[in-house]
Length: 194
Image 1 (tube, rainbow, N blue to C red):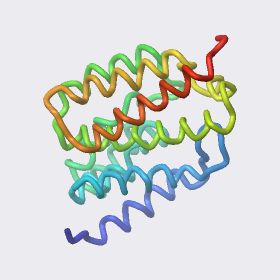
Image 2 (image 1 turned 60 degrees about the vertical axis):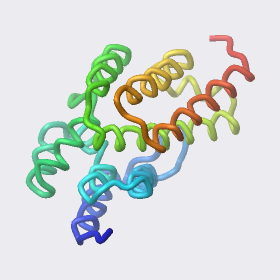
Image 3 (image 1 turned 180 degrees about the vertical axis):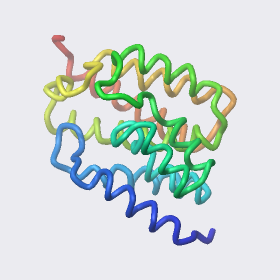
Image 4 (image 1 turned 60 degrees about the horizontal axis):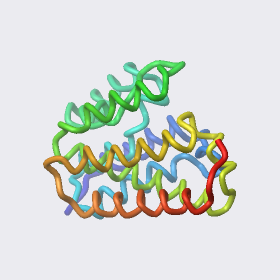
């Protein structure tokens, strides 16, 4: 597949928005997450718009809300903006309560088109892998850095696998399901005194 210079523009925009951020519970530059999501989308056959949305999937949620979404629409078109909108669970700071936000997101994703589901699966796949790594290195101390804590975070990922699977079968979803299972096994093996 041939990609256009729009991808370079999207990366530059993502870097401008997220260049000073780091990943939760680490000093890893946030841009690496965006690059990983885009790479997973590309590895699983995503087209250029999906790959760009992978780079920008957190932009509106974390860096400017609806104004940023409007800029994405202007720079990259309606399709990319629609994917970013589909990946966004809140446009406001402070964000609404965690559980209600995640429940609404799960409900919305259940009926999403397969193109959006691929981006969501890629995002969650990279997040789960990072969580497994953190759990391996730091143990149960990591759960304090998650708004949902241990139990709700595990619930959220399991529910996402369940709803993404409705009407969609894809290698990225199988990868996500495997990683969520691995996370649950590791969390269970460590035990937890919440």
